[in-house]
Every structure is written in structure tokens, then in C-alpha cells.
Image 1 (tube, chains in turn brown, purple):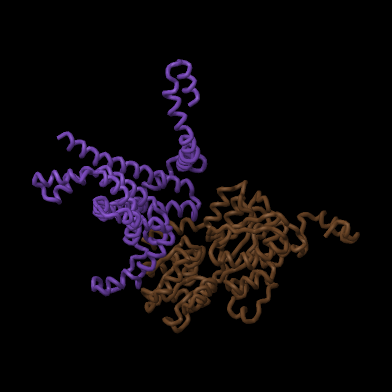
Image 2: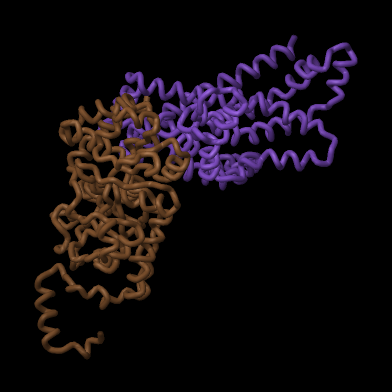
Length: 346
Length: 292
């Protein structure tokens, strides 16, 4: 798009747009030219990172000429890296899956998304009111179970206390994001919640003798060995286990599926903030979100995304998810971990 | 450094006697100062501050809490157990290889280092296969009738001890091998010709002379065992918390850097004290025997 070809009308509207900074290119991410520029983002590692690279970053690079790289690190480690490089970030863009964006915003480590044109399409709650972060995908949590051992799909988090499952339960440690959510959902199932965690600890104490694991990488071994039947985790990992041939089902509990936001943020002072903004805008595009849903069963955050019928049956819609009060959870997390280490893991 | 150089040069008397060693040492010293001493000190300094003020709060929090004492105790227990196991298993292996006349001795020594060639993460996944409830170890013990129901070593401290002993054993064997190799077999022969049975000769002569190697190997294994992170994290899981995994948790999960720093300072001090006491105890005994 050379300057000489700009019509008078475009020029005028361009001027008008300049007046209303920040500049919002209206759905014209493809028109942006980042040839020779690079973008470094944190990534989740493993096959997840590869799929995101192919579904989002590669097409983005093709459209804009940028060169995007993901550096694998878990969300908590990513936040620590962001904090340690505050002011002079080597990584332009971060992806989080454990609510770290709240902390990052509070500590002033990220900058508002100024050029993400589809930001307003995303429902409130899946984006920061101040525009500091946006969820570009959502993972539905629920109950994973061995279909050959448990005939009737579990219906509630209360089922973890059923005597017939004793000795066949595994659950994630509280340092794993899903471990915190499991505690909160147990509390909700027994009359508590984010503001009253006591019932959660009470319930968990009854199953403290069961297998406790730390990372999703243990899931195949746990389900594969046969004597673990039921684990609270997510639909994405259920799908991975199914594709690896294990008879694992995913059940949505009646308390609701807690949703884990997969968020994207731009580090404060990032050298390639403009490229990062454009990449995040690309992530919100329906075609990218359909690809993510197809390959990982992650829920699309953009309501304009219309999943094909076959996928829609397997991926919960964003409106069907329970919402946890992440801010309230984050405030108490340190305290809960201390208590968990003493009362559950000991 | 330069001031000292100028002063000695000014006196005119053999400036090279100080200058040359300093010059030779300087690059190493510089690297060491910049990349080790300075970061280490600034890391430890973090632990002495609480909300911008000098404070012992983080240390008080540690020492006034039974949970953290247990944590420290478990870590030291892990270190001592792993050291003892590698010592008991390592001495015979190192002795046999050192005394071997076969040309395969070198090959055997290389074979013992194999565990070190596999990354900690891959190795831990291997242990998962062995340690889970229906894993190889459990099934084997069941088949042999040693246990009557499946047992799980995964996510237990015992599992961590076994896994660490396996990977640190080569370091013990290599250290001991070097020392045992340098002991003249004729000394044992002399002891036996004077009437000592072979086991006594081994005990009185060979092992006494190998004491330096035993100290070095033990310290190496002990310090690596208690600072190991990947194996306790992957094999030990949530229940077998040690200092290293807790430092990680405080740094990465809770972002409580001052407390994490206090934890590492405490671990460092305990390791130093225990190592010094151990080395001194063994040294004094050998000195006493030499005198008598």
C-alpha cells in the first residue's frame, strides 16, 4: 500500500484516526508489514506450543513478514522471568494459563494492548477492563475418568469422596493451577467458595492419602497404569489422552467447569510491542481459534467464532463455563499453599 | 590488586614473586568474582531485608516453624542416606575395578558413568516406569513374594533416595577409584604376610589409606544430593518436599524471593558446617593414627 495510491478519502479518514489515538487499525492486521521484525513470546512447551505455533504464529508470520519464536516456560516461571527482566524485557509477549496476568498488571510489568482491534468483541471477564490482557482461548476443567472402570460418568466434585473410588483417585498438587481450582471447586461443592475455603480443605483432607501429582506430564502414566480411575483436570488433556489410545472420558461437573483463561500480554518496554499487539489480534481471529479448538479442544474466546458442528459437540461453548474469582484466589494463594503443604501433603 | 603490584614494584625487590601468581590467577578470579561471588552475595543480601528494612524476619519465620525444621531434617536425611548408600555400593565396585588386571577395566569404569549421560528429566521418567504401583519394581517384588500387595515408590522419599543414589554412584566410584588405584597392592600383601586375614588387611591398610577419597567422594555426593532439584521434584512429587524444591516453590510459585533467599542461605550454612565437621573428624582420626 504505497502512499501515492492513497485516495483523498482514505487520507482524510487516516487523519481522523490519527486524532483519536491510540491507533486502531480496523481489522487490517494483514495490511501491517513487519518484514525483518521479530517477535519473542513465551510458550507452553511441548506439543501445545507446536500446535499454537502452527495455528497462530506461522500464519501470522506469513501474513506480516515477522518472525515469531516461542520460548517454552510454564506460566509461573514465565511470570518470574517477566519480573526479573522488568523494564528491559527480552521477551516481548507472554502467554499465561494460571491467572498470572493479574499479578503482572498489579506489579506494573505489562502495558495496555493499544492495537488489538478485536479486543471489544471479547466478552467482559475474558479481557481486562483496562485492556491490559485478553484471553485468546479458554480451557474447560472438569473430571477425567477411566470409561472402562467407571460406567456412570461422574457428575459432581462430591464424587471424589465416594467410597468406591478410594485408592483410585489422583489429584494435582496446589502449586499446579488446577490444584488450586480443585480445592476451590471442592469448597463450592460443600457449601463454601473462594471466600470460604474451609469446606474445601475439609473435603480434601478425606482424600489426602490418594495419589498427588505435580505436572500434566504424569497424567499418561497415572491413567495408563490402570489403578487410577478419576482425576480432576481439563478437556484439552482429556483429548490428548484419548488420542494416545487411553479410554478416558471428560465429564462436566454440575458445579460447572472452572475456566482457565489462556491470556496474552505485552511486556512493559517490549521492543516489539507493535508486532505483539498484531499477533494477539491475530490470535483472536475466528479462523485461528477454530484451528486451536480442532487440535486441542480449547474453547474459543471470541463469540464470533462459529465452530463446525462436529467440533461444537466436543468443545464447550464459552457461555457454558463457570467463572472463578481469580483476583480473590490469587490474594489467598500463598496462604492456601502454606496450609496445603502442612495439612494435605504431609 | 594493582595497588599491591605498584607497592611491590616500588620496593624493587622481586616484584614478580607476587605479581606473576596474581597475574596468572587474575582471569579466573575475575570470572569467579563477577559470575559467582557477586551474584551469590547479592542473592543472600535479599534475605536480610523485609519491605525495604534490614530485618531477620525471614530467618525467624524459618526457625520458629516446626514445618521448616522438618523440611531441613528431611533434606539432611536425604543427603546422609544417599551418601551412605553410594559409599556402601561404591567401595566394592571401585576396589574391584582398581585392582583389575583385565584390559576391560577402563571399559567398566566408563560403563559406571552411564547414568550421568542421561538427563535428569529423562532419567526421572524412567524411574516412573519402575516406581509406579504396577511398575516393574512392585511387580517384581510381588512375584518374588516379598510383598503381598502392590507398593508405590513414586512420590515417596524412599523413591527419591534410590533415584539419587543411582545417579550419584558414578561420582563416588570415580573418586574412590582414583585413590584406590594409587595404593600399592604390596602393602596389603605385606599386611597379610604378617598374619592379617585379607578382610583385616583391607580394613587396616587399604581403606585407611583411601580415606582422602572417601572424604572427597562423600562430600561430593552429599552436597549434590541435598541440592538436587529435578529428581526430588519429579520423583518425589508433592509429598517429598526438600529444601531445593521449596526454594523453587517460593521463588517461582509464590514470588517470595526474600524467604527463598533465606532458605538457600540456611541450606548453605548447614552444608558447610556438616561438611567441615565430617572432613575434620575423618582427618583427625587419621592424624591420630599416624602419630600412634
